[in-house]
Length: 528
Image (cartoon, rainbow, N blue to C red; front, top):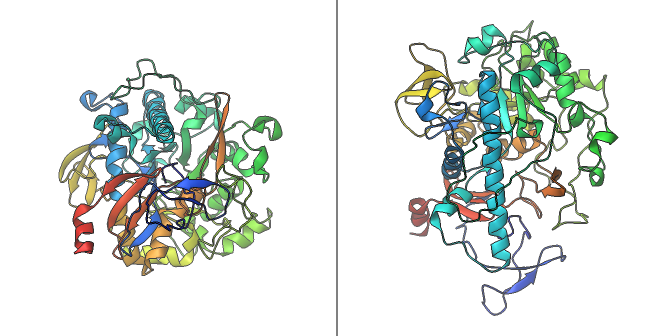
């Protein structure tokens, strides 16, 4: 795992008992060295959790640009601290999520999150280089920032919402994308897609330098945008945002070079569009799907309820939707794993992770299984209707892990009592304070499924939403970088792993092959 990716699914033979015996990997293409062996005590080894909707945690608010709570304005150090602590809950990747905010907030927060992501990536590359050179990093102050959950692109939740379904979002910022993609660009301050840059050659600093004059937000900084599809201009915006994703070539060798010339598109970076905080009808949902939307944000919450004559967006979980959409487009073809440095010539079929392997025409849908936002019976119904589309999210806010009291969400105050988070002096739910570990455990109980099914909803399924269950290439400056798959256990995938017991308690977390968390108390009980 020291390379940051999985290089073998079996250990090499150890004839003389030496832990550093060299051996060939499972497909016989590369030699690796075993540095240490971890005894999993007959527990469950799984890909790490991927949280695609996280507003904050442990006192860190990803929407706080300092315009209201100046003393709590988000910093790069805050993001890194949150990343490190999330590993304790089994999260190995997450999308920092910003609620509906002012234009100024987007122009501050989006570049700041990018700097945190690049700082994390650059330091891991330096660590891997030291590993190859046989050097060990000694400074604990740097280690705590490096071994944390991967910071993915952002989830921009709003502000293109139906006013009546805004929930805890500030009504002053709610608007419609009247002019389609042009309104989206103008609100977020997004510039044309460029190359990720990180100009920092200082290898010895403990905390990254703060951004004095942050660059402009760019499309590459964003993974997901949640919007209400029924709004004026929304269908046009969805088509523009997802055009590149829908026209993605099947020949992976061509990806990353000349993409713009191959498929002309407003964007060089594909965006996942999710439907949420919406009064959309069933037909609105079908139209949004045909324009490229692929996800429903926190199913049941902030949308019209299911009715037998007007099923709304909840009705999109029905298999009937695929029959309707198949009349408009060809069935999606099964996507093959992309070549990876440790697997340049894949000859073996991808392991069957789920009985529904190909990407469904029906949308994915996220669920907050905290026991507050959705009744257990509703959780079970959704999973039974469309198991391959279920994605668990926390939708957690900054108060996660802090206990009861008054906390902030953007420029709003939130009251926490137990597991319930509401806007101060109201009964309006304002996100959750549940960890991903808790949501997966709850889901297993609510859905009545086995541990494997529950783990899929927190690992493979969110990876597939982002298109990250296969390797992908991205251009950084003049270098084409291969990003390994996440959410899967296979040769060439990222070594982002968790060890859990039958009750799904997290016993250990590895990110990029490095131990990020170890539950010493529970492991000691296993060995007793």
